[in-house]
Length: 466
Image (tube, rainbow, N blue to C red; front, side, top):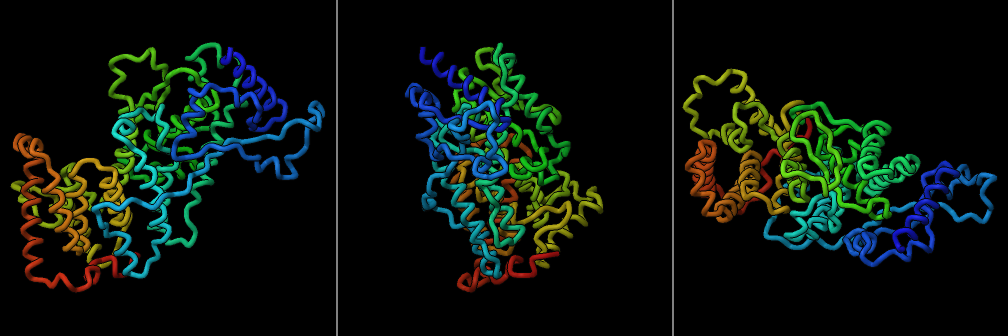
């Protein structure tokens, strides 16, 4: 009975939308009769608060005309907006990251980047062990859209040096508008079956709104990796499209339009689009394509890390080995067969760092690579992220911090990983490079005075532009 009562209120809302030709959500007293077990109650306990607010369009004079068919006493339009709870102070960690302090020491204001980092930490602090393994289509505790925008806001501040931060709330509003826009396409045919409903959402997102998957196979196009750019240009990676799709489904579940379990099928090829499907009809072969909260955040950050890794041209897939090779920490038995182009690329990358060039076309960006590594460490993923961060600090001339994180990596390695590396040739090369880097850093520690300013020798203190 309650479901039918709520369904009647939804029909009333959609009828009102079609009459006014605006994207509205009518706030009625009927919504208060929802069951306590509804998703709205669950959402209200999360770190992001969902509130009803008068639409800015309604406040604007050019949108205040009321159709003759509606009486003047008709209720005003309301739109459902996300409002972030007041950001708690970032919890103290054992990590004393170098990027922001190094930039500050070279005269660059990092206040906006630090605020975005605090916002990122406030979101991932909500991740319990259970929540990390929760599908993105049913996650409630972490606002994935806001988290992705905090990542974009920090990187935008690092590269633009703008006095104005990236407007996170404005892009969240744009993300919410996608869900509101579907209301005009909502009809009885869409609800004739679950498959038709999910198919209508896909047509709305990929046909009506024109979202498409980026054709950049090697993720070299940064616009495809940041949520605000994908919302603007409507072209992005499969991860960003999965996130947008899941946020739309989350809004529909909140409103009561979605009353069954849905999963997002994440494509592992280079061309497929993320699609929603009825969980009751899932197959065993669908399991590898389910995207959890932890996996999504890890992949987003690792894609950024790979895209902006300063040592792009090498014959190995391991990012660490590329940086170790540039630092002469790898004994390559086939070094004589290496092309002149690869040798020149490695030398050019090192020369750019020594001159203070942070980024250049097709050669990565040290700032954004460091920020991705720092966030991966905060996310508590693979200890190898600490190792990769250490060798980047070495290339920056931050030897003291590099040694510190290399020791943390050695302490964090599990015994099982040490036993399994003997059967993996790449792992053997990586561990040999770690030991050589460790010896070199200890020798530097004995030769240099650690008490001198730690940022005095690094490339961040030089001219920041090519």
